[in-house]
Image (cartoon, rainbow, N blue to C red; front, side, top):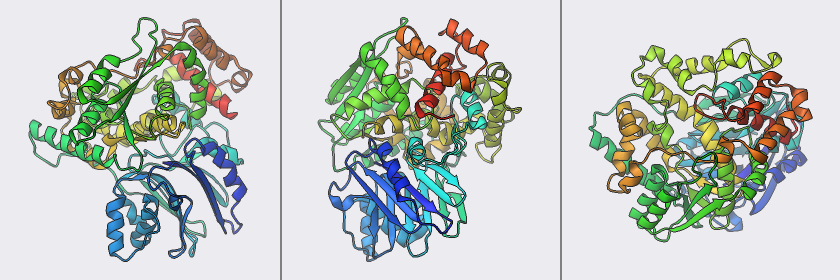
Length: 591
């Protein structure tokens, strides 16, 4: 797990190594263990290293194989690198390190761009062929690892974070109005390739982009889960298959040359990860949970459940309690760590959790993704009885934060688009072949778009802000493929994630399986008051906010007068949504 950066010139000029060097300080938290930079002709590559596999200097990056004429910068982990290394040795390749980085180089030389299909893991990387000048950019199937792009005539820059690209300069920082409308409507999700800034894009998940020395490029999607029924299994058989695939996924994610812990919320997903690791013989597993002070009568922790799991499986458990005096300073720090504006209050929780966890381990497993692949959210059951041709309207009614008509009364006219781009986007996604039921269509969209640009991005940004690598077994692509073919009614059973609950019986205590679904509770943001409310007020009244004028003044004034009543469709605080966007723009000095 690391931070990568680079520049590719397509106009015959040498790459600007100093621009790449300027990006590296922004990536230091992602890779606190080392730094490297290589500039050669039209390409410059930079890297910040977090030592997880092959802790020696042989594993440092950028990694060049002079014999093969290839240089690579890589962020992530290829979990099956040892098996691939053995296979490549059979073809005569010699290795100078024990890293997964070198395996990617040899695999690319052997199989070309199709090597990507052989990798089990999470990754974003750039590899350069020095003889031809060809550069390949790639991102993992579920978009777990990020890659941001800034293109101008004759030049392409890339980095693991958006702020790193800003540090290199010469980026169009005007607001992308389509992205802004998605932020306000599509539950703060901005689908790839857009970002909130017009001059920054992101490589979509499961995408390979090959750029030739003459500037021509091709881009292709190399993987997609198939949401059609292909197997006729009973309920118990589906539970068994899901459980077995998850066992493989958590075992894969223990590959490391350093200890691996687990973020234990006390919910089913993280509890099942702990249980399966214990079942596989892991002893002395380190687990972590976080809790906050209650606010407005809302509980701020789920320690009762995480303590139960820790005791059941004998983990070395750490309860992290966040008092008010520690919470407020973390808000600004959390905003600064965001590559894009992310409205979820979970971000602050993950930032604080990661700060403490990073003092104990460098790698953790986490339960993100189960709700998106196994129908754990509240908006899926209402779609179960909706005909396929009514799915777009029903999905928007459940998931969108506001209608286009409401947005027109809230967003300033100069930023408002004439068309409802979020509904158009969902309609285009739902119109694609496959996913024959409304629930299937929603799960396909959420696993390919919402999951990537909300929970997955949130976890990556907040853990990497503290040099902590988070691994997500529920997003093992083979498990995602299996889950996609599982009948929706089995996923929706038992109040959601029914097939996973069936798989967990006898493995996880029933108290955890049968509990009401919980969310990462951060009461201080759900209920804005005191210093937090003043922080929000200051952001929306700041000179930069007034000059920008994103929102109609009467809408802002109404929210500030009643900060906790107006909610989005899914119950999020509308005022926080506005304030978070302004705080991010002001922190980055853009827009």
